[in-house]
Image (tube, rainbow, N blue to C red):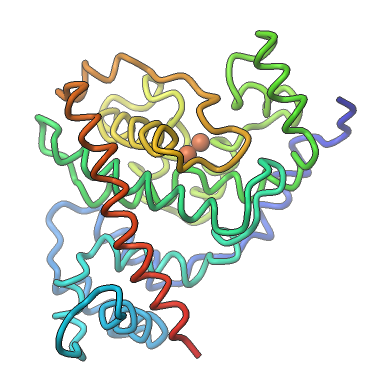
Length: 293
Ligand SMILES: [Fe+2]
Ligand SMILES: [Fe+2]
């Protein structure tokens, strides 16, 4: 497989990636703090006209199914939940990254976004079942962002899917991540981490993005969160919601049982529940987008 790309070209592309809006990055900072209040989230949304409009469109979308129209941001946020509001804020400024067809992974436009949403729902569900207190909304946001590196790496991988899969089958690479590194000198988790640093994301989210395929390497402090997203990612892929050629081409780290007290039955239930929740959320988010002018 003749590739002449080196990682510095990939890193250069990160510099050109869009920045997060100040409201999106403030929302990420605030919601990473366990002490925050819903009022603080509402205050940020209210200062951003585009975000306010989109939040109201989503909550009033037909798919959300409310009988009367909501016009107050405070009520909208309590209906939607702050995690979804953060997701909307990220999507507004980085939709060009999320909506891109991942040609390098032979995935269609929207596949990354749908995969991220499934992972977010599954990770949050798992975080909720965790024995120790975990910021469940952080697990959701981590799920939304975990594969963001793929949106940049994808174009450098165009046309490689077949040979990558052969490499893994022959045992020359352990998983898709290692195959990416072998070809480009960098993998999607590292690219995502560089972007996370550029965006100055809170530390736990940087760790999720960097270590979602290698959770045992995350800092001890954030490891249970990283394991939650690691499992959420696998559950989404098992449910048929991957991003194309790399689906299920990663290893599951079974040491999750050291960090999360979750039975196989609970994981199976999560798999079933994710699909249901996903259809509901997907419909309201798409309605909210279509209603835009
Ligand atoms: Fe990944
Ligand atoms: Fe993923």
